[in-house]
Length: 591
Image (tube, rainbow, N blue to C red):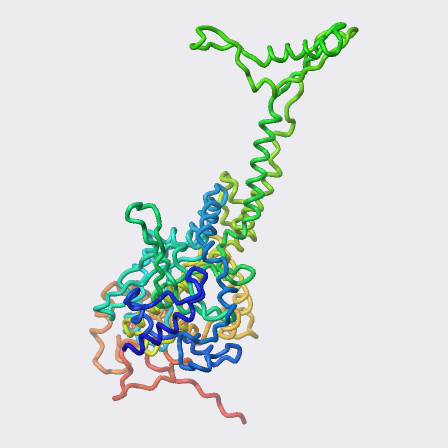
């Protein structure tokens, strides 16, 4: 046990000993002491993707340790400098900047629109569905489905889902610690704890594939004398299966760190904030209507004329106000008056002192340039610009705006990205409960899918279905086109769908016949018909015709083909609930 512990401890240290916040030496002396559950999650094993990468030629293997699971590549000297240089130290500032952006009114409204559309309940109150492989038996599917519902309850999407998606849009990453009971590991994940984005970082395998090998948690240690001051950070290694990690799937230009979705609107956000400030400043300066004073200075020489004009300006700039300290009215400087008026001296022979008025800003009501940047901001966030107008009516007719359809598809991509992270956590739960190996399941046999947006996306899908039905109806009416072929070609039905449809057609005809008997003979028509009939007498009066007996039938669709091909049950009797076979007339031989 000690040898194995030293193995993954040494291997994990190879990935973290050159991180910028840990220095050039190994700082993790004993992983088991810092994280007692590291070994439990490590024993779960690698994913299929990692096992495939070991056979890849493009991935450089370590010749000194070919069996290592954690040290799968040769660590280049400049690898971590390239991958982590000046990133983790600035991550907190970068996330804080994004959160400030998210508090901007227009961005906050756009994020609310996205988060309101991304969570959709079905008729059972569920937000996501689990699709399993067909090779599983019914009891196995029920057990897997029960575990899935248990994990979904741990995420508590009903109360916290909106917050999770908003965090993903702003921080680019969402981290959950998978909490287990060390004494009862077979119970799987018992709780989920969300970890702040700025306190944890993923450790990648290599630059080519970006396979996550683990995580480093920077746990802040606060000063006992000053609870608000962080004294130091304690670095805790965590196995990749110990964390449920969901990211935005967006990299920066160097693929060194994840970018949030709102990074797309950074430029539009800066421009919009600047244009708003400039409009406010312009209106403050240009809005007042100013006065022009042309003061007659007579024959005063220029120096005296300027002094006389200055005296008038000073008197105009002052206003009388009451001052209790001076016990009376005093002259007080009025700074606003200097922005309102202009003073000019006039020489002898002019018409005297005149006062004219300058018009204020003429285009203060123009907001075209401002709305341009608002629309640009919404387009950057992929939110339809028609949602800016709160007075606009909701249209769900045959006309769908293209940007609404694109917005719905963007929501589906975001849902699928979040579902991939949930799938990793669910697989970890199944591994801990040994259900993955018990039923010989692979990761590709499980698929999680969120409910699609219910507005324009479903309307578009219904329109596509109407087109398919119309084409099928036109072709099925053509005597030269097989109805079965049209079902496969234009409706996209499989053979199983066609078999099930034929079986339901038989049941519908049985129900029609039974309803006709009820209409003719009343509710007790069975007893009235069965009484004069002799048991087993074929052709007796009142005997039940073939196919009678109500809407019974096989519980599963029959084999593809005519019902006459069904073999009779032992003893010459037909299977329960199945119609007797009708013989197929053979064509007469050709002369």
